[in-house]
Image (cartoon, rainbow, N blue to C red; front, side):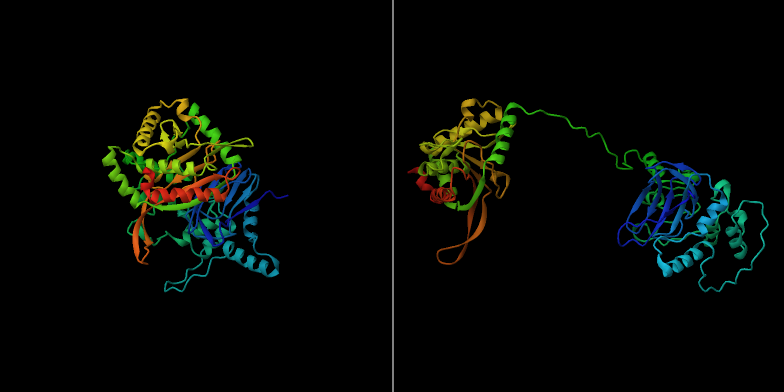
Length: 480
């Protein structure tokens, strides 16, 4: 039973019709293992390395490297176990029919293609040069019968041909390559003006990289088969010529550094994971006009000598709205809802140890200057890592503001046992319709209320937001 196997031009993608062997990485007659890279194949879109699917021997190379493009399914090489003789390999190559050619019509077509590829040379284009006179070649050099027949028919001087077969045997493809003569590719794009020395034995990819980096390959001996210059040889030349330039992208050590959670981060992670898994969140969105609030804040800060932020006013308004809607100012413990007479509003703060939520106790009873002072003290303690248990325990509601970072809107995760959290986005100027039907611009702040549906219904949440909106759009009520 024959151990010979064909290696054909693979098909990568629907649009691929042909490819070119850019480089053979296994020499003819050499053994290879499963997973070894056999060759580099270039198509119009990609350059891809082909790995061996199982162990074997590269018994015969049919398509030479840097040769003409071969159609999908064309025979590129013959694999075996190393025990085959030259006659068996010749017969296999000459009798090969592409696998895609099936049926009687396909077999005829495939046979014609194989015959044209292996036994006959393509009909030359009309030329003014005289036809070649067949000659008789008498030589002791190892040469396949088909190669000798072609050389005699085309009057090819085989003395200058370096055989690529085993032990320097001249193959049919070697004579075909001699008939083609040196390739003179027409370069396009950024390498159009690069003059290549075709006497240099290098892969197309190595030539392109060398041209792009201004590297001369003349006199360079490569590390590829038979001294062929490969891309790694060119990269080595680039590094040698310019040590400061990165010749090839290299992966550096990317071993992660494990940083365990500190106690605060561990608690926050546990609570928020449980919250997202167990709490049925729903979201209510609204936006408020903030021009009146901004104007009042400027005046109040001057009169009271305070430095209250917009967020301080939102916390104060949330505290007063919660006092008016005690069904939202709640905590959920098991199957019990705990309602509170006053609003302990937590403020989300980004600290060096992560997200923390210190609490402004009874925010609904404070003046804006008192609240601003308390909030500033909590933020300073959070920044310095000095928050205590009393600063963090409890809370009936949370305000999380990312507007200062330019975040337009977001959905915050409820901090249990609380049942609601207010997410505040960035203020922006937006067109609005006036009472007279004209168009004007107003500063608007988007708000999103995340609600625990187990304890608070949609109507209750909507009523709370309506009160909050009214307090912020009519900020003088905050001083009543």
